Length: 143
Image (cartoon, rainbow, N blue to C red; front, top):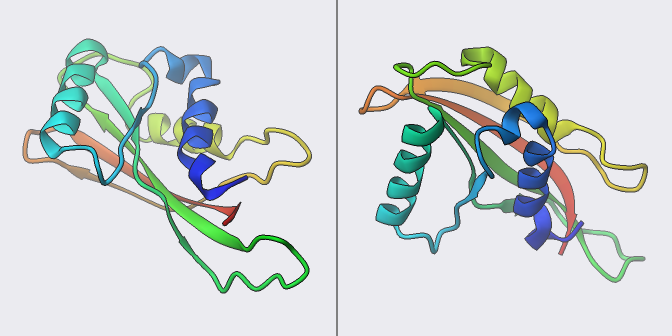
């Protein structure tokens, strides 16, 4: 998988889960997304579904040393943010929702595509009272 395909990969994995698909297509956020645009889109999703799932920008690390290949393989890192409005009724919720997202992103696509793995998870409450689950993932990617 190329580095530039990682966000779309994560979103498609989430969208393939019928329970998560009910919350709408995951939003892909980049460093070029204006803050106000991202904030409005997230708030619209929270009003509509009570949940917003968005995939953050992708970074990478690693030495990239594979001298026999035409490309370098690095560890791509990305985060999936799951924001919940605790005043709305939706299911699943809380840690069960975060676990379902982690399982969806880590699901095996096929024998040739490497799977992402969740390397960190935490939750916090935003200044607006929303619960944010932040899941960090890593997957091999070509550059």
